[in-house]
Picture (cartoon, rainbow over the protein chains, first blue to last red):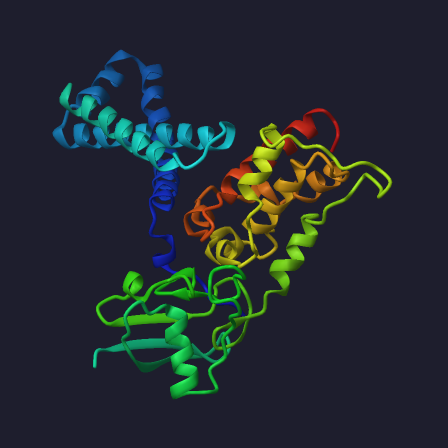
Length: 116
Length: 237
């Protein structure tokens, strides 16, 4: 029998980055079927798709959309960070990389939100 | 006198925390605290240490939830209010109190082919390895490991998959992969390429975050992943 670690051993920036990457990936994969279904509405004719697109103009839906962009940006930048860690020679600058990933994700989310 | 409230794990893995009061001293290390408890309060407390100066790695324990060398950890650095919690290292079987069984940890070094395989004989001349050659630089980055087990205890992948070789064994394998004198590169890459090898790493970086020697086993594991992929692509594995 062994002792198990708790949240205290995981409380460091790189572990949080892992969690954000994993959770954003899961959330995006849950959204994906809905995304394809929405696109599929175009097959039923222009009117059907327009009805759906009008529905997405609701403020709550716009907010959700911004969150989706944020998730996508977080997952993308998190993935780029991982690729850099795996494929580039690195020493000690992984934390700055993490800050860049978080910053870029936030910037993408804000750009989308403010452009509304 | 200012007293520390120290909570120490007693018994095996199914044991419990027991509380002790220890006088607070200036420049006191966590190892000093454990030693005080054993010598002045409860002589049945078991723990492991040797050098007391950060050379041997024997005194690694979990202090306030984080794996550390207790000899190089000042109480002032980790104390929460007036309290400290001390437990045995995670991911290793608990023998008693603060002592863990490290056999599996070192067996994994052997499983990762952590042994140097010489190609030369005593009749050959000394190998010349330029200190700025890429292999030497890569090996240098990981070679100061003293096998304390802090990275292994901090690794979530070890918790999830007990067969996972772990950061220290893989780091050792990477230093040997970069040793031009070594003759077992292919066997070593095969040994670290399986499900329990380098590709199981989730890049949490806990090992690199916690290593008291500031080694980045994650970098070594990333190097192994690249080396294994390249060898497989060339049909060597």
